[in-house]
Length: 178
Ligand SMILES: Cc1ncc(C[n+]2csc(CCOP(=O)(O)OP(=O)(O)O)c2C)c(N)n1
Image 1: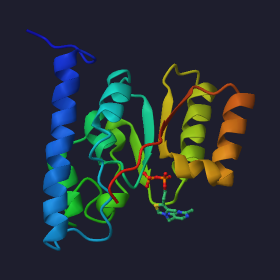
Image 2 (image 1 turned 60 degrees about the horizontal axis):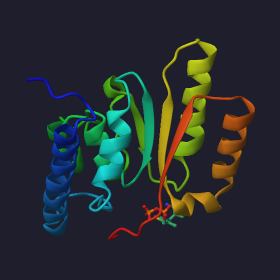
Image 3 (image 1 turned 45 degrees about the horizontal axis):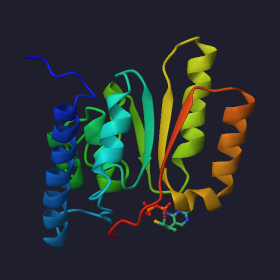
Image 4 (image 1 turned 90 degrees about the horizontal axis):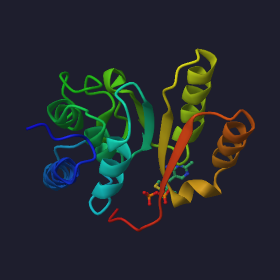
């Protein structure tokens, strides 16, 4: 039996994977094994699962430092991400990105960003590139409501609207454990 993306079982499986990964990540962080800061995605699993279920593999995505949920939902490798958190050479960014700067170009994950609103202009650039090469792929930017106070947020939305770019904006407004 094939379970299609978007099926409730597939969505729940993704949400469960994210929750369990984050719980383990918190444990590892508390043990001092994760470099930098760790911003949990617990409580927002459904957002990543739902949005990413509607994406194709070649659609592009940016997220924040709280981006591990989206990384998993877009098909990123849990083992590679875990190794990345631990700073290992077999991590998805060879251990140089850590928990806040994940990317996996093979899955269209063009980058998590430690700068609030930093992913929005990058997603707009990805949308512009898709438009220029006449691809029907889309670019998605995940961000928190704090990003709406940044100039980059307004500049990105303005350009996306004026140029009619294939951009999806996914903002979360709930508070999350820091
Ligand atoms: C440009 C910039 N200013 C300040 C910070 C420090 N900072 C880190 S997280 C954060 C709060 C962001 O809130 P929000 O965008 O709602 O996302 P959340 O952390 O709640 O997911 C701030 C101000 C930063 N990373 N980047």
